[in-house]
Each structure stands twice: as structure tokens, then as C-alpha cells.
Image (cartoon, rainbow, N blue to C red; front, side, top):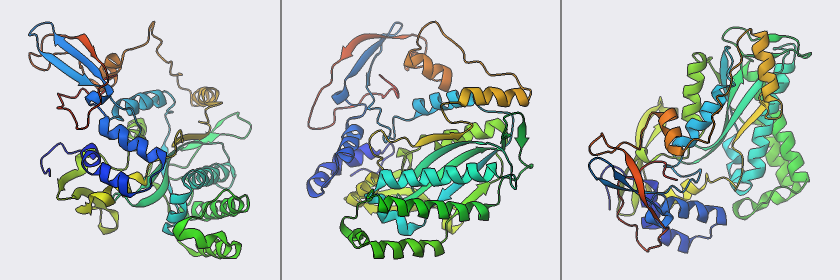
Length: 404
């Protein structure tokens, strides 16, 4: 049992994971994620030993698992991604639009993660781009970054897409910049109605094409009549789409990107206790005036909920549409900057590839080459440590966040 600070998802997996794996039938992706998190920054992955050239202090750093679901492995990747995206930002207003599907679809999403999340992405992106292209609203081609989240604060299923949308776009002929009205994008009721129609139409096509599976509790939906009745019922449900006020300039967009792009279902700092087979963690109840509360689950239920949000292997959860689509992004950004009369951002070229230590210092301001004891000497590698397998977690030294 543990109730002190520094608790991690890895601690829960190490302590209760073996029993969970024995008692549950698990897909390979879930097993891989659990294993990666359990051995992250331990001797099992190997590492290296550094020595201070001033005081002689020895430091052991174990390698990271680099799994995108690991709470400890996102910071540098997030910062590098944000740095790359910052070169595409324009001096315009940006909007934050969120698309959410009704909770009745959650069981279908759980059993058909890839297909259903693709429908969510496609419905949201087409809704935004089609309405923006309509002269009634904007009459321009906009840019969209979509970020998929599948969880709520309590770790239950809550599939939704966060979209960062340019407050304007290129005219149909590509000859000028068309700005949005200040502080206003597109009416949310219009977006919600079109989003609902698109999603349910695509859902019908996926069923007809045999793209969906219906195991266990949703097996009754295999029957065409039952599925169609279920689908039609969803037209009368609330499809939540909301558009927040514009970000506070480019700085606000970057802060948002930092919070949302590489977020996982739960961060380690929200875990309070691991005690007698139960896990307690902090969560925000948005339905109760955003109050922070404590939730306690059995370890089995905590693991089950965490694994609900493991994405299929190689599934892309950050996507770009419209002006920001990868194929033509550079040309589109250059045209936008020209019409907005701003200088084009130029990527800095270096003569050699940066080490991860140099990247960490430049992007995050963290210098892991400085001795943590004397604060004066420089740490240099004196030994590489090969991966080591053991039955119990080894004693951990000070963890350097991004050892490669």
C-alpha cells in the first residue's frame, strides 16, 4: 500500500497488473501498453551512467519506453510538436471548437475504436470546412487541427474532438484572405445539426459496408432493423458542439496546444493513494460547476478504465485539415502570410542533428548535463547499461525524464 507522494500509473500496473492480466482477456495493444508503462525508466530498458567532472557524483538514468500512453513520456515530444506547429501560426484570431457524440454510442466506440473515431474525425472536419466554405457564413477555406480525446475526467468513455480553427481563410480562388467577424465563428446550432447528420449518415454506411462488429452486450445491434431503430433514435439526442471565445493571440493557442495535444487519460500527479486494492485520484466534475473531487476505484476498475483509452497501434490522433492539411500546408501558409502582409517564418537549419539533451535545454530550459549535486560540474557518460530483466522493479535512482 502506498499513500505518499510520487505515485504513478506504473505503480498500479506493477502491483495489480499481473492479477488483472490473468483474470481478463486482453488485446495485444493493451498488453503492450501495460508492459511499456511498467518498465519505463527501469533497468529493464537499460540506460547509462554519468559522472560529474567536478565532484565525482555518479548518476544512473534509465531509458524511457516512449509509449504515447505513458504518463512519463510525453513532455519532450509535446514541446517538439508545439515548436513545429508554432511556425505555421498566423497573426489572426483562432477558435476552439469541440465536437462530442452522445453517450449511447460509447459501447459501439469501445468495440469499434478505429472505425468510430475515424467517423468522428471525418464528421467534425467536414462540418467545419463545409460551413466555412458556404458564403452564408464565411466563404473561405479554413485550417483545422483536430485532437482526439476519448476520456472524461473520471476515466469513463467520452469520445470527442478538440479543434483549433483559423478565424478566417483563403477565398475560393485563392486570391485573398477572408477574415471572420471579430469574436464570432459559425453558430453552434448550425454546426451541431450538420455534425449529427454527417455522423449518422456515415454510421449507416459503415454498418451497410460490414465495417462494424457487435460482440457481447451490443450483439443485438447486428440485426439491421434494430440497428436502424437505434440509429434513428440518435437524431433526437443532444449532440454537443461548442465554440469557445477566440484564443488570446498566438500565445493563447500555444498554451492550449501544450495542454491538449499530447494529453493522456490521467497524469501521475492526479493519483492520491494506492491502498488496500483501491486507487484514489483527483477529477473535475464539469457538471457540478467544475468542482475538484476525489474518486476511489478498485485497482481492477482503474486499470479497466485506463485501458479503455488505449488507441489502436499507429492510429493518428492529431490530424490536420483544410489549409493545414499536410500535403499543401507550406504553400497555403505562405499564401496566407503574403495576404496578411507578414514575414514568413523560416525554420532554423543546423549543421548536425541535435541531441535529446540539447533539445531539452533549448525547448524546455532543462539542462540535464549539469551536476545535480554540486551544480557546477558537467555530467559525462562513463558507462552504458544494457537492458536487464527482473521479476520485481529495481531500486530507482533519480530519473532523468528523457534518457534515450
